[in-house]
Length: 87
Image (tube, rainbow, N blue to C red; front, side, top):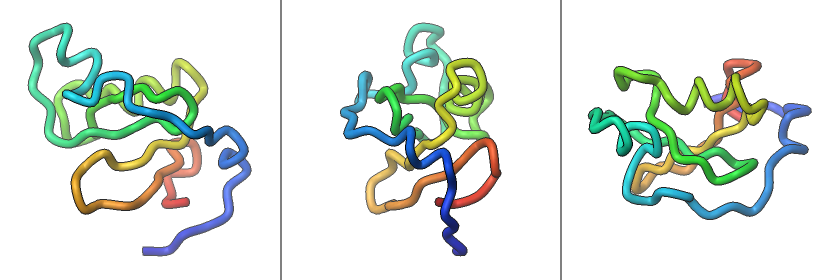
């Protein structure tokens, strides 16, 4: 995995998951998800790109919060949706 410096890292804040039990939107819709992503700007929990609704990517685009981390146990990585790269 190649990690790069990204100007969007300036948007990263100390956050806690707003809905640690699952994807915020999928919970409301009753929709399934595959993996969870944590927005590192506001704490929004969204589903990954392999999930039917791709809420993490949608949140990044609509709210301007491009850096997300995996919320899966044992995973420790961050992704920039703008640059499509690990950061």
